[in-house]
Amino acid sequence: MGRMDERLTKGEIRKDAVQDAVEATAGTVGQVATILTGAVRDVASAIGGLATDIFEIRDAARRASEQSEQSD
Image (cartoon, rainbow, N blue to C red; front, side, top):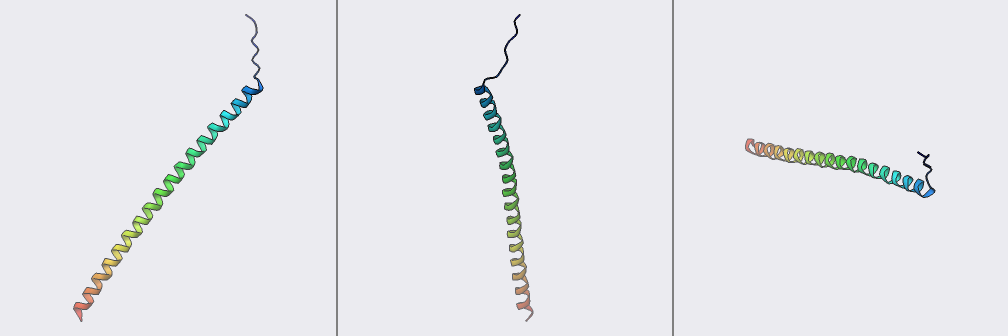
């Protein structure tokens, strides 16, 4: 059995480097998308909680005003 020459050509080296760069970029984009998705979800949840609080405050103020008018 003869010895195989396993030297890589410059083209193969470039191809491997580009492939690694694309894979790394895809992984990073996926991580950033996951972070952004979580951030958007958290912001939506916080805004929803604020809206709920505002509705409750408005209703409490309305009830207090009605009770005040009935006392007069």
